[in-house]
Amino acid sequence: MASLGFRITKNTFFLFFGQIAVLALNTVTLVLLARYWDASVFGIFSYALVWVGF
Image 1: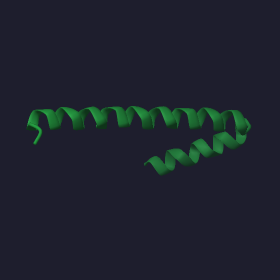
Image 2 (image 1 turned 60 degrees about the vertical axis):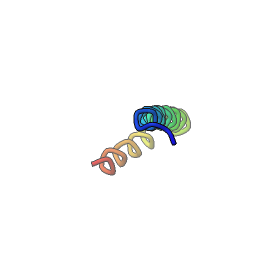
Image 3 (image 1 turned 90 degrees about the vertical axis):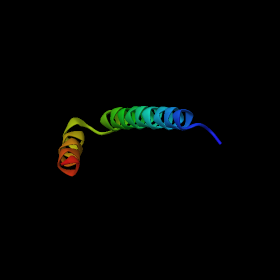
C-alpha cells in the first residue's frame, strides 16, 4: 500500500496536469473555431460562451 504522502503527491500531479491539458485543448479549439468562422459568427459564439460561463 502506498504511503499517504505519495498518494497525495500523485493525485495532485494528475489534477494539475489534467487542468493544464483541458486549458490547452480549450485554447486550441477556440483558435480553430476563430479561424474557421468569420468575425460575426465567432462573436456571437463568444457572447454565448460568456452567458453559459456565468
